[in-house]
Picture 1 (spheres, each protein chain N blue to C red):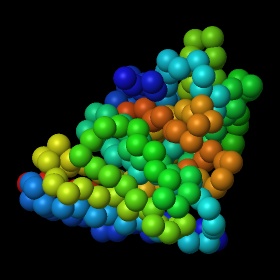
Picture 2: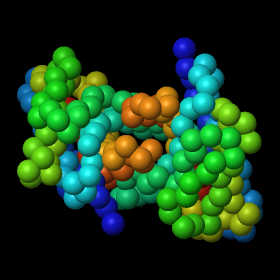
Picture 3: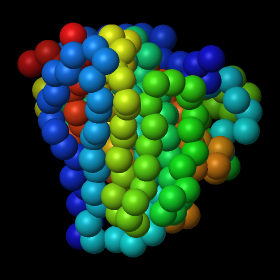
Picture 4: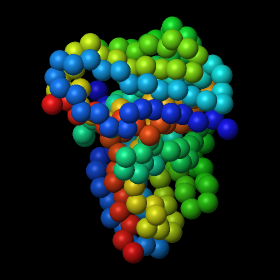
Length: 111
Length: 112
C-alpha cells in the first residue's frame, strides 16, 4: 500500500519558469515531510523539509507547501534551472524511524 | 564530516547465488541505518532499519536479510537471489533523533 504518492511520473518546464511537483499522502500520522533530489546512479540527497505544524517552508529557490486537510504537499522551484533536472522524491515519516517515499517525479528543465 | 560508503556500485548475479552488500558510515556514532530498494515504478521502499548493533527491523517480507555486526556497518544479504531481487539498493543513515537521511551511492543489482 503506497502511503505516499506522486502521481506525475514526469514534468517538463522551461528554464526560468516555475516547477511544481506534487505529492499526496494517506497516513494522517505523518508529522514530517521531506523532499529529496536524485541524479542518475547516485543516492538521493536531502533538499527541503517541513513539519506538520507549518504550512510553508522556504529555502532559496525552493518552497514546500503543506495542506494537511487535503493531505497534500508540493515543492515549488522558482526560477527553474537546467541543473534542477533530476528525479524528485517526496517522503514522510511518523517519528518511528521509518521514511515512506513516493515513486518520484522526473523533472526536466529545458534550456 | 560524516560520510557513507556503499559497495559495489554495480553487480550482476545469477539466480540462486548469494548476495552481500556492505555499507559503512564514518564520522558519527550510533547512527540509525537503513536499507532501501528502488524498483521500477515503486519508489524507494524501506527494507530494513537498525537503531543499534544487532538490532534489525524488517519492513517487508522478502528474500533478503540484514545484519549490523558493528556500530557503523550494515550488511544486506541473501542466500539465494531471485529475479525479482533486481533493483537499485540504497543504504542510508540518520543521526539519532534526526529525520533527514543521508544516502550512499547505491548498488545496481541485476539478477540474471
